[in-house]
Structures are given as structure tokens and as C-alpha cells.
Image 1 (cartoon, rainbow, N blue to C red):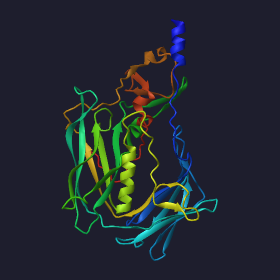
Image 2: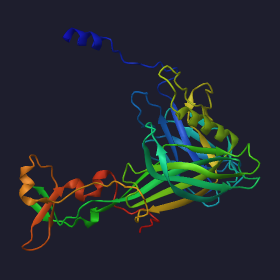
Image 3: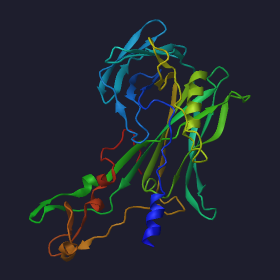
Image 4: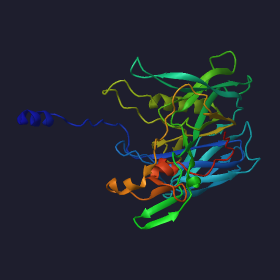
Length: 376
């Protein structure tokens, strides 16, 4: 039996795909809109597929130039991120802009000019109760499905991309009146300041659409993300922020190729997808491979709130905790501090619980309420 196990183990070899591309190339990405305020450009190096991490490139000179030669310079705020605060009158529909990046090695990179097209109206974002299919045909996940409707004029852009971000509010399970930092280190601490948290994340999926083949420049019931009951996202309040952006034909084709590449291939022996070429090149060496894309757009946006005030007909999970009697505190074996304690009052029993039951930040969120938040 031992010999058989050894022989079987010796036959297993790791599969190493052969990638027909450079492992480290420059990646420049960004967008500029007709909205005033903060805009960002990122400059980084691609990472090996074995270690997919963001490798920002600092100390570059980054600027955006319009068709009349007016320029806005970006400031390096660290980790490959460059920021500019655009004035009210810098861009409007019909303007064309180009991005220029000069690296610390004095290499000059430039994008082609991209024109801001009028964006159709974002009519509404809404949700419906639904079921999500799973690999098991006899099992579905309950949750809510988001949709949007948009309509535009014949002169508006026919190509659209939607950037979607989600934010949700969640609560800790228990409240406490004291905190124990160690066996003999206890202080009064009201946990109401760490009871309520918010968590924010952009969705990984890219939503793109086009009405070029339609008679009318409108879309109805375009599906966005589905939020199931397998997380606590719907436990209190969930918010979806949708940015609708107009795209030129070149920008749409780029995002369409990016979307196609992100779809998982059907088998182990499928050819690995090549990196999608963008609209940025090395001015002095056009043959150099440069990834990323820079585009200009007009924005429409809408924010939708979903409150869980007993309106769902399915269970929404939440972290489950119970107060523990104080005489069990040291029976649990090794104690991980801090420990929270709930003291009801004089001559009444006290209880304790672990940190994750009292501090909502343990789950990764923060206690600062987002701007324009809508609570119930």
C-alpha cells in the first residue's frame, strides 16, 4: 500500500501554462469626465500570473491635454496613483483629450485623442426579488436582482459602460459596557461607537452595452448584479451606486475585448488569453507593448438604497453571538484579548463575549457613515 501511494504521488506534476507575452509591462489606466472634481490616473507594472499584485510606478509626470493645447497636471499621491482636481470649465461634450505620461526613465507615453460624447439619460435603477441558479439544478439562491433602464437621443452615444459600486451597513451582535485588555486590565467602554459599520467595494464585473444595432437608443431591464442571502449585505441597508458613462467606438471595442477576456475559458487546454492592447504607446518606440486605456466620458449616475425592514421573504444571515456567563471566561482555554463585558447593573450578573461579537470593524468595515447615506 505504501509503495502504491508513493508511485501515485510521483505521477502528479503541476501544470505550468506557457504565456506568450511579457511578464512585466507598463500599465496606464484612467478616465476623465466632464464633471469637475477629483480624477485619477494609475501607472503600474503588470505582475506575474503566479503573484497578481498591484505594482505602482511613482515619480512620473502625468498630464491631460485637450484639443486646444490646454493641460491639467496630475499629482503623485503614492503607490502609482496620480490625482488632479479639475475646474468646472475644463471639459464639455465634444472636447477631445489625450493623456501624456513621462516615466522616471524619461520615456514618454501618450494616448490617442478620445472625444467626450453625450451620455443617454439614466432613467432608473431598481430591484426585484429573485432566485439565482447554482450548479445544483435542485438548489437556487434567493436574493435581489438589480436592473436599469436608460434612454437617449439619436445624437447621444450608442455605446455605454456602467461602473457599479456597492456599500452596505451592518451591525455587531452584542453591546458591551467594559473592555478587558488583559487579566488585570479592565476599563469602562461603551461599544455603541463600534456597533454600526459600513463596508464599500466596487464590483469586479464590467457592464457594457450598445444600441448600435437597435432602432431606438434605449435599453430596458438591463441586468446588473445579483445579491444573494449568502452574505450579510442585505442585513440592514444595502446601496448600489451606478455610474453610466458614454463611450466612443474605440473605447467600447476595448472594453468589449476586456469583457470577453475576463470570461472563463471552457477547458484546461484552451489557449491563454493575450493582453488586450489599449490606446497608449511609447512615443519613441511604438512597438513596445503598453497595456491599459485612457478615455473621456460624460457621466450620469444614480444611487439606490434597499432597506431590510422585514420586507424579504428569505432569511438574511448575520453573525450569531450569545452572552457568556462570567464564570466561563477562563474555562475557554486560551483567551484572545480584547474581551468585552456587559455589566447590567449593581447586584446583577455580568456577561462576556469575544471581540467579533461587539466590534463591527472586525469584519472589515468602518464606523464612518458614508456621505449621503440613507438609514431606516
